[in-house]
Image 1: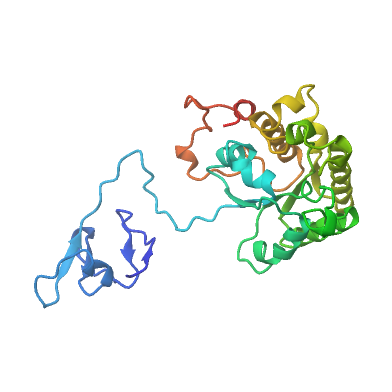
Image 2: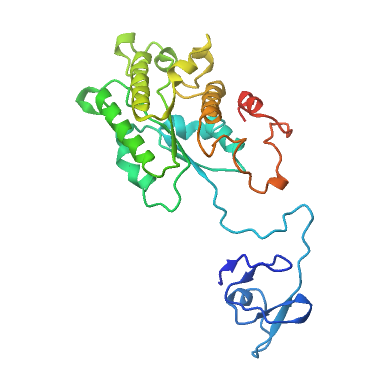
Length: 316
């Protein structure tokens, strides 16, 4: 089949690249039957060459009539991390970002449940190749919760020693920074957990496979790396615990976020994007909108245009 290209015609009609328009009266476009694209559409009733005339198409007033160049190249945001990232598209903070940036950014999920920083380092070149034709404008990266689990006998399990975790995160961030001068990075620190919700009475406190204290230690280590490499970072361990009932409302299973927990993550990410002195700005209100003349503000569940604060509170 011939490749369709955006050739500008009076009717904004797409024609096959290999077909040459023949000069004809009344601005009509003539296609030759030997074009393979037309052979799939037009029945050949006789062997002799013949032509068909493509009349101007009537375009509804509500549809843009200007030619569309395909594919449209939008900025890319990549969410890179473990299950906190992977599950964020299920009514979580990733879904909120995708909704806010629906007409501006291609939001790409690279979340891998159960992974630690060691796993991430092994696939870094595959997920973020340096020779890619388009590099991400923003990478939101999170690893730490699985690294922070206590080591198991025999060395199995996702635990990564603290110093190795810090070195892994340095390598990950340095690689992301090297992708392009315009690639920005936001690091999410290890959030707290609700130990009782995870383990109940199955383990005495001193024998639990993971603890909130170990998450605090890895959170601080990640924030230290972020300061050293001068990237934006969000202290999730502290932010989640700002409300008194955080243990009751933040987690679905003691680890992964409910809608309430995701609201905190969304709020903190959007705050960084709003306040960062980046040029160009990556906040959704400042970025170009595709087909802006046909744009309305993101809507809430009732279909009415709403603002960022409302969207985050609704966690849509």
